[in-house]
Image 1 (tube, one colour):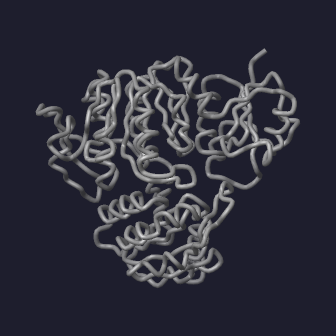
Image 2 (cartoon, rainbow, N blue to C red):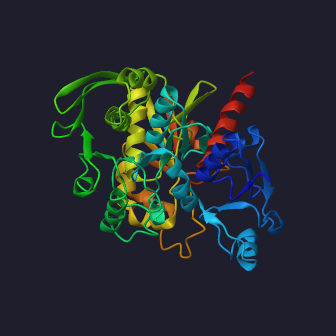
Image 3 (cartoon, rainbow, N blue to C red):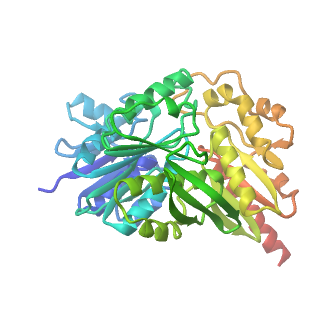
Length: 443
């Protein structure tokens, strides 16, 4: 009898990607989740993967059960049923830790840029050779014959500790997830423990002072813009069609590369991928060729045009990410007003980084703020309101509700950048409807 994989919380970005990958490898896959629409479910539906409502009857003793990290016996009937009847299950990261041992594995870790970098690496490598991959935007690809496996390595609650990839990129270290990590040093210690598990090569952004402290048994290769790095990106040409740059390795020129994405951070992400694939023995001419066709990942600078208005959707929910996203918008649209619509994600993060959020948002020409999106993990919302953030922003700023986004219309020749990890897309959809209605009324 063929084993059935059952996912508790299948709409989660990592979970949906893993479900898709196993499905494509020929396994029987199903899952359960809440009824609310989430952007990952479209891919699951297209693949014909059954999505059930949470129900204790979904749990069978002969299933391979993979449980999302947010679900516990006190908030999920399936977990409670499994515990009560002694039915075993693995968490996502526990399953992944054992699964990857059958492949040559490439991990991508870091406080920011994991998903974009995993996306670049997955795109390039799967175009060169048969590759399975998991991207944190809910995208997964599986092949039963694949030798290589690319995956995103998440530091939250030290979930990456079961992973032992041969190669890994670490993009940066920053203080985030203050509901779990106590300090920047706590974050560093987690990444340092992870680095010790890499076996063949570790690729580190060399201009991050925290990352320079990392130690590993594997050879460490630094990448960056500065000459003291092993892999150096130089002769940058940033235009409205993307970024062109050269890369050298310890003084040896590796040639010119182009990636059709925006922002200095994406040049670094691409340089990390170039370094990793060069060291692991792939043809750089093939790497160069396939970098040119990278189309991006979901919810990372995703663009659409509604009634002639450019709307950018981005997952940015930390000050460093906001700065990178706004930098990318300015590169692509240098003559337009950059309007940021931001929803703070979690009260703990908002309290911990209030001043940094204000500084980052001041990079925009105008700012609109949505109400703080709280997490189910947060028992105490603390003494913070979105108006506290608004008071610290020096640029034009206004708090808007999802029911009334009409103040956003007060701009000509603007690009609207919606950012957040909560339900900021509901604000985006409200604005799109408003723009569409304007068209109808004119007609």
